Length: 61
Ligand SMILES: [Zn+2]
Image (cartoon, rainbow, N blue to C red; front, side):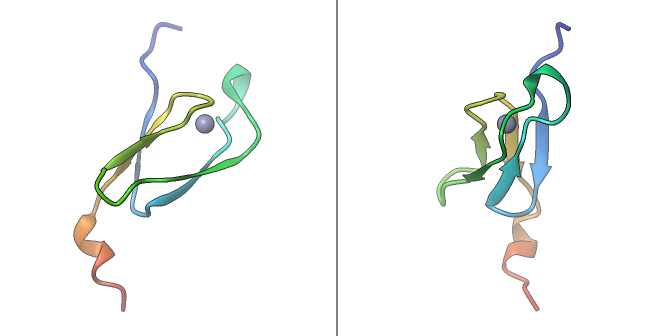
């Protein structure tokens, strides 16, 4: 496959990644998007987790 690494939109700064199915799978790890960043890249499978919906962050009921 020649596809670029996956980009996954998340709404929380803490994400769990297990690489999904197939050869890229790996033990589940928890990644945290730094306060001054909007994304984190999984060191195992190189997926990018991009923070979206920032406003919702400040809208916790
Ligand atoms: Zn991963």
